[in-house]
Length: 521
Image (cartoon, rainbow, N blue to C red):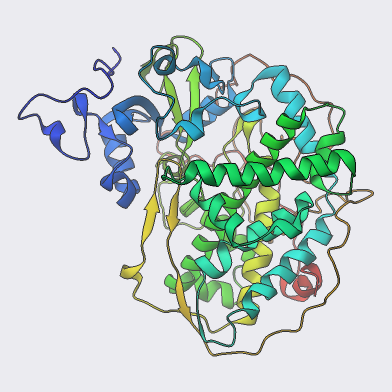
């Protein structure tokens, strides 16, 4: 099979060509941007799957060609095989030949930076090791108390009014409050920082200024911590034996702040939307048949915070999903389409509780190291909100809800709600407690629900878990193997594949009995 990318980026299709349709471009390839991609991404994924299979050629902004990986197993291979698919964007052929200009709308995403997400091998291990080691030092129980306290502080702002926008007044603020506290800069939390974090990834005219504001805040933080270390995440990165430079520390703080903020804000909004619009979902939650962590996990399958991640770049000519990939080609990890791959999920209405094989946090060496922090913010925040306002109702018709999207995410603009006005809750006035811990109890990040019986996958990696998983036995860091990941065993014909679990579920807990203690009441 020859590559479908036989056109020049930006070239116009000939007259009378159906590619003049807004959803398609040169060569009849579908665009991963524009009205169709933003308004109905699931429909676009279905069309691409029907036309091309598990790996589809698509067009990015400016009709720059790339590959969108749709299949679950193909995405796992893509993320787990850095010897074939690198994270170093400087390999992109379109950058090398000038097809993609430095001011491309996606430049903030693909422009190479001295951070672990653009590195492979030993350099990635050094930088990511500093991040994961610093995360290990976080006092997780103390963070939960602050999440609960911040949640109630936000609810106090609108509880007496009987109405609110849960996106603008809750979901967009809680993650930033928590991350500022973890980083050691609670005094920097304000509306401007929240809006800058939202704006800088949107490709707007003010995105550069928003990015500059965030970099300025983080640069001042690193300068303070070089002079006066404190028990916070910024100080731990500064003093880590990896000896990162100030620029490296600032860029990693920026990366973590934006990734954690964007994904967690979207996750909270998506969970609350499902609670408010799906009667079965809410009935199971309020009736005790589903816990908040289970609701979060189901949402990570159905409405992941990031729909795709750009990108990977082919190290050499290779094949993936029956497509011939050329050296220097760009590929996107298709998170949302992988989560709905019919091979692993033939029934999209089936409950996925107890199953963490989704790709909401990507996979392989670059799997999100802070995913359990994001889960904790969503779990505790949503639980605190629902406990304060148990009679929440959607304030508009579901059809009136609006989203804005790009190739990476789909963001709910507003979530208007109404409820019976309730008094403000008195909050303690204690300053932020120390975030450091002496030792980390096994599984301390986990806020889990009772395990569901899930068939074991039939391949040699069954039972393995990442070294950073709660309860995992610490292992010395090694340079990721350059060998391709073992291929999973072929399933029996007509049998739905249950993907390998990322980690074993925590022991069953009596959620209702311990939730108030667990959340720090």
